[in-house]
Amino acid sequence: MSLEHPKLEDLDGVILDFGGVLYDIDYDAPVQAFAALGDDSFRSLYHQAAQTPWFDQLETGTLDRKTFYGHLLKRCRPGTTESQVHEAWCCILTGMPPSRAELVVGLGKRTRLFLLSNTNAIHATVFEQDLKRNLPDSEGFWGAFEQAHYSHDLGIKKPHPSTFLHVCQLHGLQPDRTLFLDDSIQHVHGAREAGLQAHHLDLTQEDLGKWMSRMGWR
Image 1: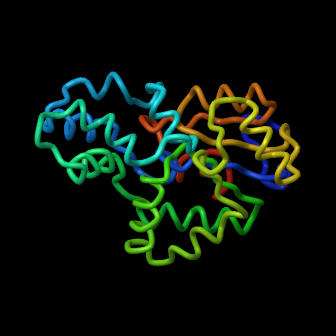
Image 2: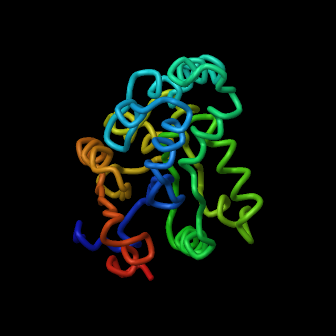
């Protein structure tokens, strides 16, 4: 089987990233929002390629919301409220076009489909509520996945190879017959170390629909 253009029928399953690949993310939005709250260095703490330890702790479920927001409040000007911090933290989440959700529903009918996301309980609540409100068929979208895995539930996260192997083991997936798609190159490298077929979705060049067309999956 070609690793560049794998056929769905040759795969045990497909694992998709969420933020970026499916749900649109704006990494600059919280940078600007926290700057407006008096923190001009948020970008140095949190970006697509790396982040400080307490962001990792939040994403693996070992740091609670109050403590996390306490860290951020200390960096903002006096008088900033937790509600303002919440809005600034969550403005990174910008939504999902229904057409992309329809692609996922179609793909789920053709292969075993899974979600693997580095996310935290705060963001998960926000984007799940957003999809419920704004997708014409949010139940169909989530139902396309055999299971959705969030790092804050798993207690482990990408790009560690053990994370990918854990998900494969949970679902009886053979790593070299499993395809993983992510827009963060470090996660792709981790999946490849674990033996998966991993593709990088370069969002500056194409979106999920164009990538699926290029793979011959549409």
